[in-house]
Each structure stands twice: as C-alpha cells, then as structure tokens.
Amino acid sequence: MLHLIYILAFTVIAFFAISNLIRSLITISAESQRGSWTDTPKPLNRRPSQSYRVPHPELLDDNGDPVDEPLLVIRSVSVEDARQRLDSIYQSSPGQTRQTEEDS
Image 1 (cartoon, rainbow, N blue to C red):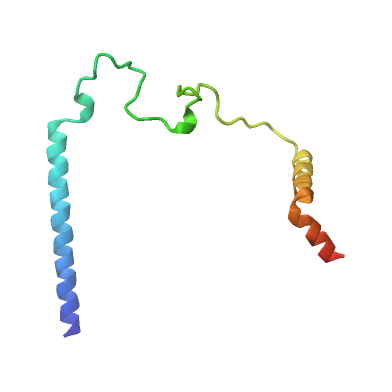
Image 2 (spheres, rainbow, N blue to C red):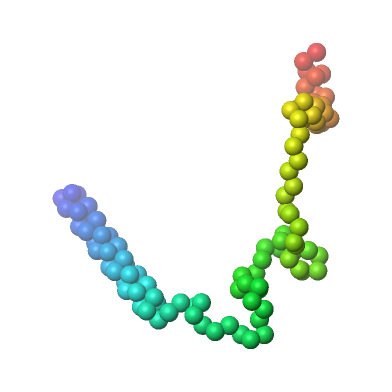
C-alpha cells in the first residue's frame, strides 16, 4: 500500500514539474517573439557610454564618478622579503607572547 502512495505522489510531482516546464517554455517563446528590451529606442539625453546598470559603490570615487585607475596593483616581492614580513607580523601578534611563555 505504501508503494502505491509513493508512486502516486511522485506521479503528481512529475506532472506539476512538466506542466511548469511547458508553461515556462511558452512564456519564453512569447517574450522572444515580442523582441528584446535592447530593441527599444534609447532616450536622446542619455550618453552612449552610460550603461543601464548602476555601478558598485567601490567603483565610484567620493564625488560619485567612476574610477578610471587600476583597482589592484601587484608588485613582485622576493620570497625572503615576504617571509620576513610574515615573520614580523607573526612576532607582533598579541597571541605570540602567550605562546612563547607557555613553551618556556
């Protein structure tokens, strides 16, 4: 009896899933035949370089203008220099003094 309930439940779920898929395909088909939003004419007062999306706040300066400089600058560092910097950060960390006291 329990097997029949499972089969019936999964049949109903499959029916809803397939009907939802068919409705989605019909909706997408109707929208594609109407044309996309890029086919609509743009307002005359809008500059072509502007996009419709609002940029992320980190990409804007204090005045709200887009930043035109590189956002990430990577400089090469030798392995020894990087190791010395990491060691100095590790030595200056607050937990380091407690660990050395526990070790001795």
